Image (cartoon, rainbow, N blue to C red):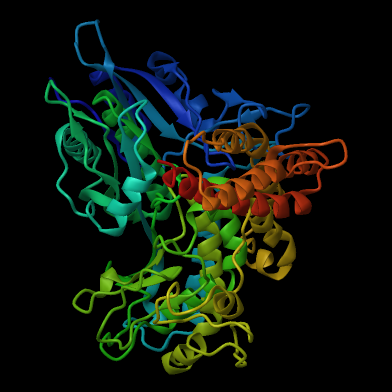
Length: 628
């Protein structure tokens, strides 16, 4: 196979782009990729000849349009004002998506390619998409931080003078976890739970089709320049079986792929490409891939740990990590690092809606699965021993031998989190904390971050604690966690309410002018519509089937325990799903509350229903196992 073109580098001149496309006639199409407020990416098939002919129109945003019914922009692109223009973004890499099931018959005999071009969504002359929110936010944060560093040149713990800083680099990376299974085959959740507890799968050697697909994915991603660092088994799954022909069946396991960091916008773009490549390669090997945050209740979910960094560029071209301490054996971080971390934690209530905007994402954030539930960080017991506490929300990643490695790991994201909006809100929150921190010594900042709940601080909230070196799940009761670190939202409604309940914090994450009130309201409205629709059309039908399958078992030998358990099961089934003239079941109450817009009531009912379903499943499991 001739050498394929995988990437057109950022800021490549138009003439060079045209030359490369003409040298690669197997690239038949272009597709403009705009990211709406739900994180969906657009995809079209536009013949390359039209792109070459009208390239100036594509750059200007006049060549391609969509409308409000095609993208999630509630309250912005409405049906009576739906026109959305889509200009290209030449400041990032463009990637070629190859279809290995469709080969070019015009002489090249190569797979047909589509040049995927990141772009923006413009409505009434304003950029209203997720990529634009992040891009424009970073411009503002950079300007404010550079001015701040020039005004406060001697920042405690920083290895470079603020006067020397001429530019900033926002670095980010994500880690992709996913479940892979044999199509149409169901594995035992109970068996996989046991395997997970015994850690039989973590770092286990991959086999057969899974091994082939993982290796092919890593090789393919490196062709795009992602510099994959690792692919490995994760904690979830079980051992596959071998059929008579020697092929693996009943595959169900969890994997992870990690790759090199990039600047923030490019990192978010890369995530979309990686998901696409992984899904297509595993499908070609006869396997299904899911990036859902919690595809199976009771088992480990899929996370997308998001790394956040900040570096300064000085006049001599050197790059300096702004979070790293000048003396890493005496200080955990510089004053900039402390401020950034405190800004993230203090304002996380209004970052969280962008992190977890679906029922699925909140199902993952439960105690016991290494998924964070509390707004808390860990620094390590001493600066000489970096922390690897996996129970907290934001990890401080440090390497005493490599100060450039210092960064934060936000552990609550999942593969379908809108990383563009999360990074935009996070860097704005970081700016807020740094503004305070540049005026303080690192010792004062460490004391502030480590203060106990009830202790007055100069930045963090009085009645909250923000640091713990303990196991947050094991060393605190749920009541203690809620009191110290704040009660986490249980439903999408509760999470979205934070955008109304914390106006001062919303003002901070929107201070750059890109995350506008209209964008925030549009995101919230879209999330609540999806929450309502999924509950009514997907989740409740699935729960109803669980109730229906919990049937009485005819047996010759029935004990008093069987009768007791069945009576409890019967009452639970009726409470959940059986209406009478005077009494409505919980399912019906939830549907009525959602349809009437009583979202607070619906949220409470959702929590109650989930608890009763888990009780029903446990009871029926015990009831069924006692039958002989």
